[in-house]
Length: 388
Image (cartoon, rainbow, N blue to C red; front, side):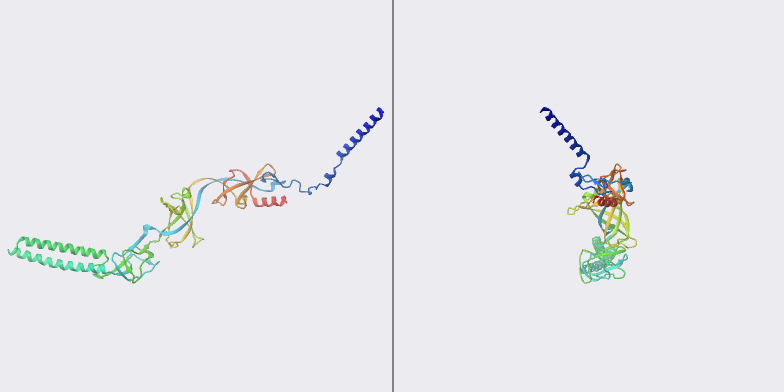
């Protein structure tokens, strides 16, 4: 009985060994039914699922690389601007004589010469001054005769010396009153000699040659003490820019400025910052930055809008890349940095303005000397195709 039991155990062990050997020599049913990878696509593109930024390619050599470089570049800032007359070449034209405008032979925008008549004013105030002048002139004529008479009487002993002294005083007062009347006429714009002498009509003349940029009077209107015209010499003008207080540290005296006029978008004008206002607008939180421009050809007119780009005279090193190396997705920019032989890392970067040579400034995310894929768009397109 014991021998029979040992025989059965030996047969069971042999059967178990045979089944184990059969399981190792052939595929299981689950393995046979599992889908196999398509031929030629194994290890083509793999994105690491942890962060989705590492990419593996089998033939990375066909993608040209370019290294980020550093350039000495100046900071740039763009601000809106408006053309304005140069205040040092601008004159307000007033009439010191009240009255009514009888003639206004010029209009807004006209070119005028120095001394040209801009308006004629009929002034009752000047008429009163002329009357005072004529009265003072008559008084002086009388006092001169009176003084001569008293001197004659005194020479013959017929008048005391005091009478001569009083006549002398009267003659002096008359001369002073006449001079005062003449000065009043001149102040009001009239004249006591030459053409138009003692006329109550005042000719308002331009004090400089230039352009009428404002006009506040027309024929028949009352003339007070306000400005009638503004005449500006526009051979040199200002471009006034509004710069926010947060950007004022990017603008300095002497900075280069490129001006593009809305009226002439294909024309480029260049100047330099001549003044930065020390007074901040409390409502807009901006300060005025002034650029002086020559306007010999008359292209610039007051109130024209412009876009002004300031280039700082202070330079600093910036990392730059060719624009083709940047891949934009929504509002973000990326570059593809090689990591090893077949791996590429998708790195987010922040960009700034375009450098003068056409390369893109990278402000954050990349170091100078780092290699990146030169044609990022083609690279990204291939990656997307191979993934699917």
